[in-house]
Length: 247
Ligand code: IPE
Ligand code: IPE
Ligand code: MG
Image (cartoon, rainbow, N blue to C red):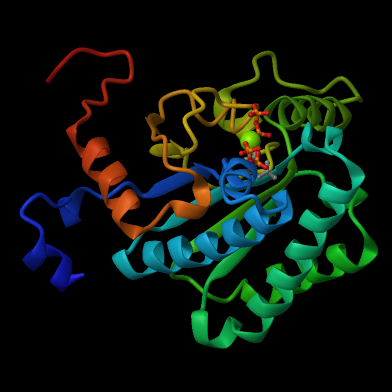
């Protein structure tokens, strides 16, 4: 980190880092197409980028990193592509488990994982329970995640909890947030979307109410620590007003 400050005049301020960064890891397919490679090669390269970026976030002291790995809409893709993404996830988790004691990263999964393969579900629960004890950076992987699905699920669970008719008159944000997959997490301060698309694609709809967005044309497999630095620097120029007025 020190080297970064020596080499770069324009750097982010360490005392104003976003606590929670979220990333829509997009552009793997286009990255592969540009190289005349199969889309799977793009997903494999994207997984490596995720590893590097997560390590960098840990090194600079980001508390929470949430990444969008597979959406509730991504099932529309050809079965072969979905299958290879799931295989890459398995591989990633097996490696993460092997390196867990060294990396010390707390890992959580947000999304409906109940429909995933038994092997993947077992890896997910092992990763979550074994990494529970770590208290440095927390990495959340959104898998079969959709913002609308999350809100519907929260509403359903809330209704079920009060089906005896004892629900309070008014449902407040804090209570409802506890029904989200993200329960207990602070809202993301900064949401990054690479690959040139400027939409949320159903990512963290509830939680992003006051997040700062950063878009870049860089494709996810080409994303790097330097790109993350750029996003953080941009974030630090923003004025967050939350509907109020300038102080
Ligand atoms: C993101 O990259 C990975 C997933 C959605 C699983 P894409 O596969 O969407 O890459 P592009 O957008 O086609 O380039
Ligand atoms: C969003 O990317 C989902 C993930 C990165 C996991 P998509 O590639 O699925 O989004 P659209 O289709 O371009 O909106
Ligand atoms: Mg895409």
